Image 1 (spheres, helix red, strand yellow):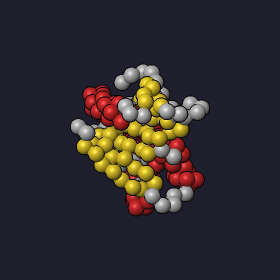
Image 2: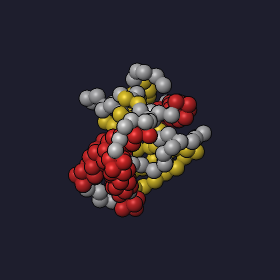
Image 3: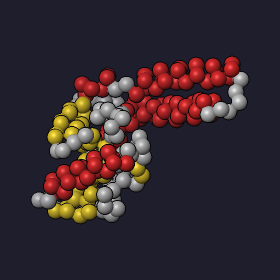
Image 4: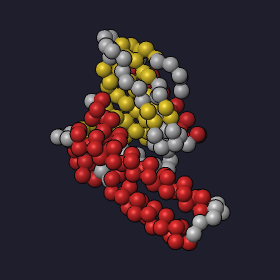
Length: 192
């Protein structure tokens, strides 16, 4: 993916966006990391901005510069993820007020809010989700140390495993978006 902003006119934006979506999905599949881009509309032109950060289970997209408004965010989910949005994806969509698209396996699924969604409630849920996600990662790291041969007391190991199970239940709870599905308009495109 290009590491710089791309300026395109109104007539060429759709073709360029579809090509970049395909390229991002190929890159994501090849390297197992999420990637994406932001599309911003200015006067008579569009600006396509690359991600600020790519990761195994997250991507950070930039903000539009002054004079431009966000119209589309696109990011991939790796093959180990669903093509449904996470609570943080939904918060980002509400915050930018842009159509959000997720690419995975040659298919692009786009979402727009449909109906009332309390952005503050979603922000709080997204923050809780990220906190629990980090706690789960930390517990998995501790358990990997146990399995890697570090000296642990049996009681300490059982406590760590028990705590991980509790955190995984909490993670499942905070990552659930079933209550929001009827408030999102979903469009699916095969572009593979």
